[in-house]
Length: 384
Image (cartoon, rainbow, N blue to C red):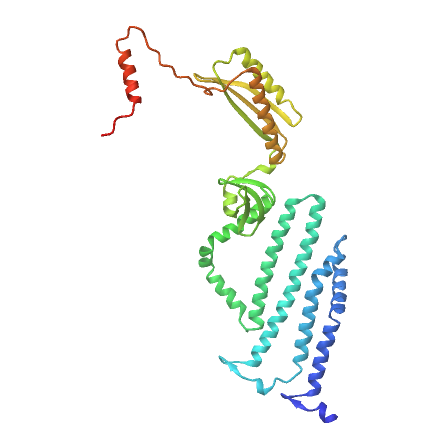
């Protein structure tokens, strides 16, 4: 039996393989318990920084990454106790298989660690977003999302640099020096991207609009769905998805229709010249009475101009900043009431009916000729 345990397989006794496998299986079996225990200890430390933190949300976010990191760490530490088998030693482009296996293990370990860090960033942003909702700070909410994505990008860059240094033995300081020398060229190449990045900070700190606002910018009207590091995504009224660079959002005139205090309705009428002054006076008074409804906050109706073809009556009214569907229903109601008022007062729109009369003057020698020319012009010409 002693010889069985000491039997050498691929350069290691069988006992060592069993110990390594048992250690890894034991860790997998207790992974959830150990990871939750570690997560609770981390949460106790974080809870000292502020009250009202959600424990269940924290555990849901970090238990998985902690368990994976724990298994990878124990597996790498256990396998390193074994001697690398000579049978598995080979070179690929002057890189030994042992070095490749070690680098792969380091990459996996670093990725698991930074996965845990990103989950911690997600939790912090979740807590701040919930606090912003309670305080009614919707603009602070979108700033939190922006900072969360920015921190994740920074963590990703740091993780890549650590992988290059630890797994591939690359001198990171030389890379940073090279980047410094090539900074001018990179800045010129990424000029627009840098401008859009700076513009995104301007948007979040100046706060001209937020996610969910209805904007009009450069002949584009729609609802802001997302504000990113480079661009702003807008869902237009035609339900298309438009991506606008943040620099353009900052440099252009942005009309934030969500922040308006009132909605304006307009009515432009061109009344027939046959309308008497008394009818005009009564009609204007009737339109004012129609607009004296609860949903209309203020209005103005007046005779704007008198032209050679019509009387121009303008009616402007303002409502609360209601939804567009409700506002359109109100406009239709006002228009129909005005039409009924015109029917009751027998007022017509200018140019609604046109009568053309040809009058023949007695004793005019050209009258017969003109009539004959008109009649001749009306007859079809014979085909040749």
